[in-house]
Amino acid sequence: MLNRKKLTLLGLLVILALLFAACGGDAEPTEAPVGEEPVDEEPVVEEEPTEEMMEEEEPPAEEEPAGEEEPAGEGEEITLRVLAGNVGQELALTQAAAERYMEANPNVTVEVVDTPDFVQDRLGVYLQLFEAQSPEGDVFQIDVIWPGDLAEHFVDLNEYGAAEVAGDHFDAIIENNTVDGALVGIPWFTDAGLLYYRTDLLEKYGFDAPPATWTELEEMAATIQEGEREEGNQDFWGFVWQGNAYEGLTCDALEWVSSNGGGTIVSPDGVITINNEAAIEIVDQAAGWVDTISPPGVTGYGEEDARAVWQAGNAAFMRNWPYAYSLGQAEDSAIVDMFDVSPLPAGEGGSPAATLGGWQLAVSRYSEHPEQAADLALFMASAEEQKIRAIEGSFNPTIESLYQDEEVLAAAPFFGSLFDVFTNAVARPSTVTAPQYNETSTLFFNAVHSVLIGDMDAEAAFAGLELDLEDLLGFETGAP
Image 1: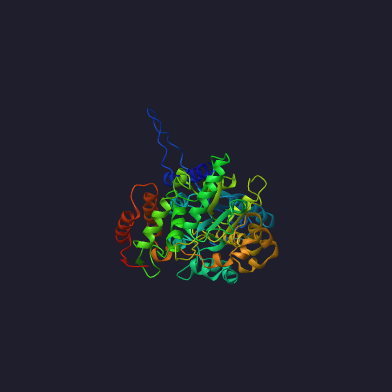
Image 2 (image 1 turned 90 degrees about the horizontal axis):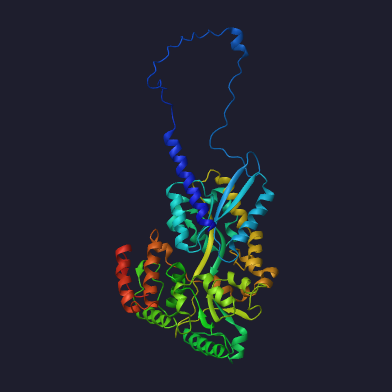
């Protein structure tokens, strides 16, 4: 893949540079070849400089003060590297933004580097670069859950002009991205989990509205799946989602648990709450979807796996992020104008919950051009660029005014109708568990995955998870 090859090459170049520096320095005196006597050389008598010679010598040129950079578009040619994602249209839209920036800044070359789709894999690549303090990455696309864990590696964007535009973005996201007073990431797009459903199939099988509860979803999915298979489509499934053991499963499972009154794994005030009856009940229920209304392989699905089944016309329902909307309406989609989106279902007696997602742009402390890199990040997160991404890729803006923009709403009508879903999404416990959120999430999604694949029931899985989180975090346990 492009991402791994390119990043491997970059890492190799860093190592080679370090080795070269270590081997450099003053040259050793040259020794005579073996078997030969050294040759005595005549001593060189240096000539005393005359007054005329001294007058002819020009004074040395004054050096530029160290540490000062030319503004973007002036001075020497520079290259900036943006480490970006490649889910759906992400990479293409990022490259298009880079082209627009280069048109306005002809002395800047922007290279967009593809990074792994799975969040844990991408984080691993980032950590390798940070550990080496590598300048090979300038602008990093970072998850909404990472500011607390990675803040030490990023500059304060407030010092590069972000303070002037921060007020245009959702306050909650700016607050999330601010660590010890430093804005370590400018919001780029926000996310929340949604339920995609086939409007034509709901009508065909006599359903008036999308499901309000997970139990209703089970019943509707089973009915539609049975009917479509009887008509000859043996590849049809009722519901597809993200079941692989990765951050995507943390998002899906948090929605199940929270919607059933089971809390948020760890409460905002630092109490481990996951081992409770409501959480156990809903995760056991979700395990029952595997190989009934969901494919047996759903326990290996990421976002794009679920979208592939859905967009081919082989699912009645899908849980995914907003980016999948515009792709479902593309010319090569089998379901153009045959689907809509709604809030995710709730548990019995609970209320719908959507996990807060989204990505930010951060500038590395190890960049050789932090001023220009910050200028690029602010350009890509500007209202003009967010509008383009909203229209062309259905990426939710972080700038509230764009939710009243007629062109944006024409391209993605649900931005308006589901505005409350996006502004009231459930946050993962990344702040309270920082800098150990990644380990917290890994313990959680592995416990849930063990239930989905039938290794144990949720009661046993969450009892073990509670003990593991106590060891990791040192927090108390309690009810949600």
